Image (cartoon, rainbow, N blue to C red; front, top):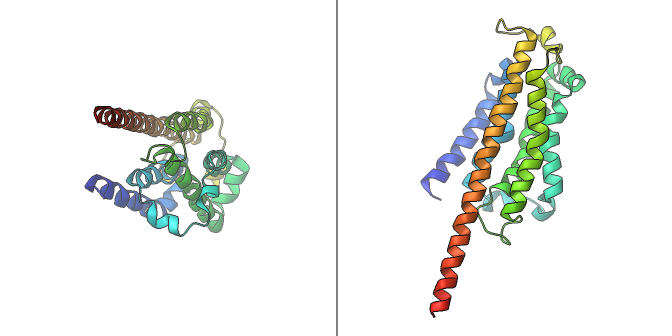
Length: 223
């Protein structure tokens, strides 16, 4: 494995460790924007790094019938639902008051994102890869829309959606709405940035693969 991919793999594991095994949990339960940073790490940054590193062979051995698990429609719906379902205010209220539910939320956010990024950042050309480049770009746009719109709604809202944080208490002297708006910015801006980077990675790989195919055709014609 090239050095860059090894670094990406271990960096992805480090991000997951920091998000799940440090005091990040504590701060996330006391500030909405810290929770959204944690979700960004688990739902986008770490899975994208792991998928880009492409350590597919080892985990695939432990997955029964992986093609069923990587159905594009199921993967896209799971990816979106694994994040947005926990942002519904009544569910968030219960989660923030239960350590067990909080752990379930964190792990499901991560688990729901790994198959998605594995499909999007698969470095192999179709048909070895499950999706064509055009399908990956469409998939990126479809999942981006509800998540970015939710982030925009949080950012632009003037009402407090999550009164549970008034119960938990905030560790910074930030008004409830301002805290919520910062969380929306994290979803909106950082999320859109990751999708844009993924778009250019997919596009760049497609161009490289097309150039390689043309070069092979040219060599075949010469012979």
